[in-house]
Length: 148
Image 1: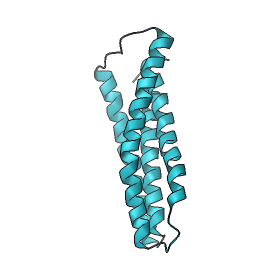
Image 2: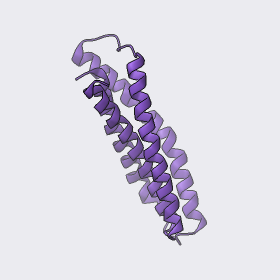
Image 3: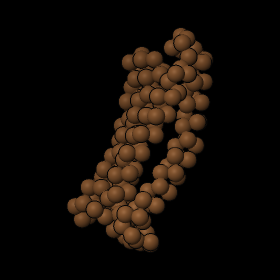
Image 4: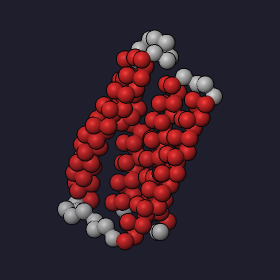
């Protein structure tokens, strides 16, 4: 398995685990009020604003641990150089990711149209973000495996 394939697998796992753990911690703080109360919107605003730096910090830590473990396991000191093929694969994964996220945003807006509570919209947005990351990394893994 190449470095890029291993990196994609690590990214897939971290794309799911980080938001899942964060959501498990934050769900305990969910306010027990009317679904349209001001506190609900404050909760979701804080949820997203805190998720971003938590996710960034966790990813940096995961990348550092991955690089160390990869260097120990493969005994390679230098990271592979990215070339045009790597950029094309990343671009293709990004295109698929944007399509999945755009579909998720449309679903989230549709949830409001069919009169679901606002929490449903925010949950769909989180799921769309996670799904778009996973699709991007799965596509990159597939294209590296297939030999794009």
